[in-house]
Length: 117
Image (cartoon, rainbow, N blue to C red):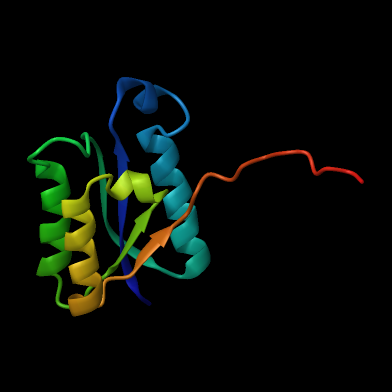
């Protein structure tokens, strides 16, 4: 069974309370992990802006991933929950290329009425 790490992040108070809340993200990602056969070895859930120069919690996630003997998959709700800045994207891509990091996204589905012709 492949190991995985869950990353849930909010950057504003509104996100903490509505829609993208940490508990909602975490629950959805646990369900995704179960459906896909992942063994979740760690969960990170925190409030931190992607725009800050030093992202201590994000660095903690990267450090945990790098410390594993076998690189686990990283499960996130959307790409914007992982990063919104170039530096973090480069770090993740380096880990993908050099260490075999897989990043899985489980986005919130959009609901709409189909158009009838």
